[in-house]
Length: 186
Image (cartoon, rainbow, N blue to C red; front, top):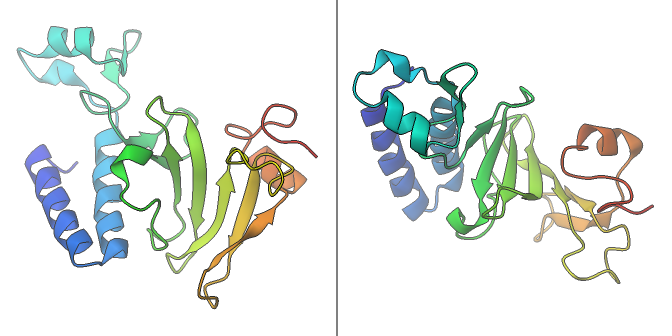
């Protein structure tokens, strides 16, 4: 496990990459930090902070005595279903989710309450492959199914494709954020 001082250093380096416009490398480092922070932490090994952490950390599981993410919560990997999806709050993103990410990863953009607004899947090359939007963006005329997907075509100047309906397989695969009759309509 990477120690917290190294995580802080990785975030500093990620910020340098971001300022230089190298969003892919910045996101890779941020995802590394988020993954490490989301690992269950057993604070019983650390003296003097156990009771305070249990009292103030909403990610504490009293049954196991462990934490599901780092103290204070924040972004991290959602391990509740063992799916490895990284959650990033919209307020932490300057211009939405980046087009480049960690190869074969999935990142959810969430609102402040943690509700997923958009899910982006990255391909083997680290480029965005598909977005799943969970709403019609208050534009039912252009998004008649409500929730919808955009397939990326990086050969276009604007690679974000037109809104499309989801397949049955995609509805099953994304049933944690998209539900027929709730936010998706055939």
